[in-house]
Length: 320
Image: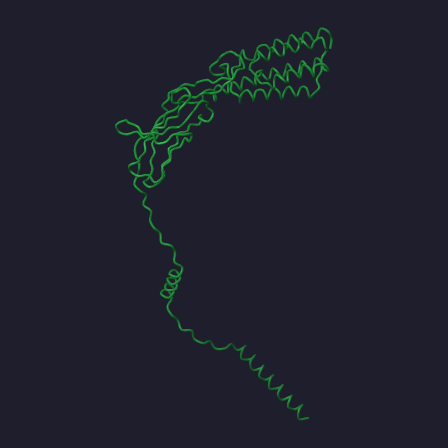
């Protein structure tokens, strides 16, 4: 590479990297990979007088991933651990591909330039997907979501505040069967700072009686009776001294199911009935003896003649 070619590539690389998007620098594995690139790879693949300048531009560009413009639909300056892990893995995989190819000099700079260009688009898609699908996914209630702030790389809890009332549910159960009230929502398991589920029986005068309290989100009662019908309230507590979610259950106890008793099959009775049916369906018949066939009569006569012949022959032999 000529003395003029490499500085031009370095300047071009810097112009591409500065507006790059993301905060993958918060991942310790990415920082370790950048240090390894500087200490282990560059000494044998790039002229020594360009090492410092190239690495400064690369590190600065990666650090400025946090400068992605704030947009409610694509980026709000935060990501969750899953998004950061996915973006970091993609970047590390592409860096390893370049180092495994043993690219040197100008080729190395070009490969890094193209890889980081694609990495910007990849992170942008991951960030947008997180913002649309995983950022404050609760449609109701208070969710305490752990997030990573790209500007400081600090992991903090973000309060996603929405209406605490998560609706009412109609539950119908037959008398003497089991009643099950499920208070868990799909985001409860990924939220932090949640405490206990409390189930209350709400009476007609609006007074309440605590039925159960604990980590289990389900209230079950076996063999319900008409007196168990009514309104129940489930409240999930949080460390912020206010309920995370509130759900009402309106329970209706229906009459007991009518089950027809089917007698167990009786083998002897069935056999006797079957035989009786055969006797009734089929009239009795008299079996008349059949006359022997001509072939059978002839065979018997020949056998008799043979026996008598043997008797006569034996007598003649004894007389002689």
